[in-house]
Amino acid sequence: MTDPHGRDRYHRAAGQAPDLPQDPGGTGTLPGSHKAAVFYKDPAASLPARLPNRKGKNMGGEERKPFVEIHMDPKGLYLEETYTDGKTGAIHRLSPVKPDGTPDEDREVLFMGNTQLMAPDGRPVPIQCAIEASNLAEAVENFPDAVNRMVGRLMAEAEEGRNRE
Image (cartoon, rainbow, N blue to C red; front, side, top):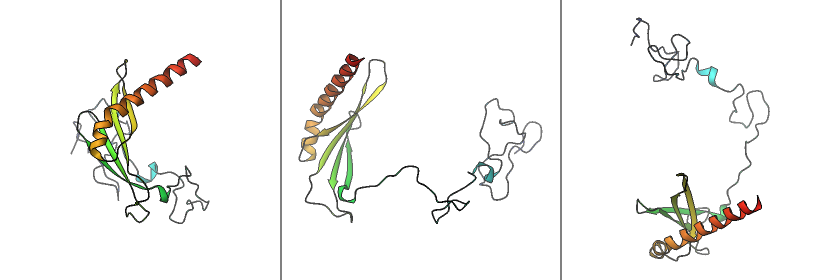
């Protein structure tokens, strides 16, 4: 494909993915375009200088350190199922499982509710709350009360924060 000046609109470097455009003029825009665009000039130019390798060391031979120390508790695993009416919100059923994925009969099933309410300034406020229930039908029935309790708690915390100021 060529631009209005007869130049190739896109160029491909060896080994480059076929759908990534080159910047033919080095201007940061496509020919005939007024919008800035991101171009993939050289695949190696966009990579960090020291990529981690598979042995836990970066290319400079230094030990690689994780960004965040994070661990999952193998004794606190749950299988999550989501139910929604497509309008009001969602109910998540969290069924306890053992590390091998089999049901853990020693722990109770949990139900969580999610919805969004509009703040006075028009922003959506996500609401997440625990729902006391022993089955899905009870969770659906108790969903409104659980959301209202959480909203009341959030409003009380906001009022308390304003009083501290």
